[in-house]
Length: 265
Image 1 (cartoon, rainbow, N blue to C red):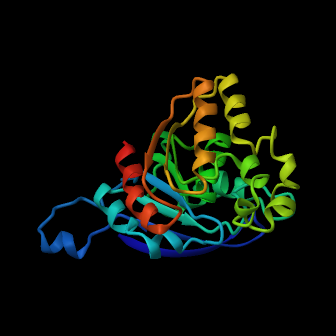
Image 2 (tube, one colour):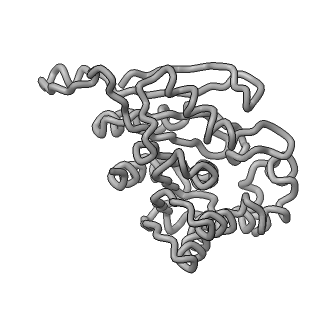
């Protein structure tokens, strides 16, 4: 894979943005094993996975702590890994417009400079923890852009996580309640409450992206995943949900991002 460290000025964020991009390209393994792969056909556009980090992370997390580069090379898809701070990937009340940036500006910008497909069913978005919430939040806001959503250990029931037990609350970034969501008690019933947004899109007969989620059964965030899945099923929304043994850690996410890739077309 070609590993590209990209910095550019974002109009949505009104500051410089940092994103890591992997593009399928000739590798030493291809050469040594005599694999004939046509990476550079004229006009070729790659399916692309927008892969989101969790709270306290940045665009380097997936490339440093997982084998996503190798997994994506095998599947011949590009990977885009943006930084979004502790924003939950929304347009923050006091802060930057990360929802607009991830859902609109970033795909538009990157398609101009890299061979990335603009076909909806070849644009995927996934993430872990906060990034799992972000993947659903972004794709449901921009269903015309993303054909597939996936979450690993996602914060999919954000009201419960914000207003839950003290132990859970201590794991959430300090800026969430005021800077991001304008008070944790204001999430429920808003468009930042994923079941509410999902119901709105389904009622409007929007063509929903295909959905996938998985979570470790020993993970503190497991109840949030169960609650979201139950709400989606009650709406008649089709969603693939897999449960595995594991906790909230990189051993789990490195192993189970492969399940996401296997689920993708």
